[in-house]
Length: 127
Ligand SMILES: [Zn+2]
Image (cartoon, rainbow, N blue to C red; front, side, top):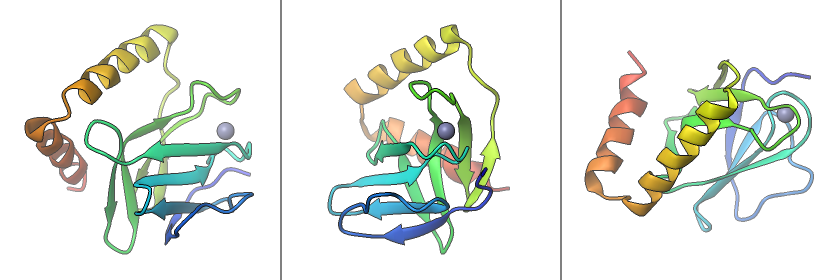
């Protein structure tokens, strides 16, 4: 069953199985986890750091950038924005490779300007 809303739940460690519709956040490990929103039941782990994923919590949860499950059979792609799942288009193999290259770059240069740009995009998408 496809998930349309996801609630944030702050935990120390992640339970197994992950409950669908819940974004588990471990501040201790600086990582979030959820069951794939397409309903396939696979675990999606998102490390939280500048250059990886950024979590915003204001009662609802937002994760940026999008979740692209290229390595899963479902290949689902969505954005978690204020606890709402917004489905995005499937990426071509070329786009995936380009994104991975961009991710590698962001990881190797996770500095202040990149962090600010991520925040700008995250909060800019609100209005
Ligand atoms: Zn899936």
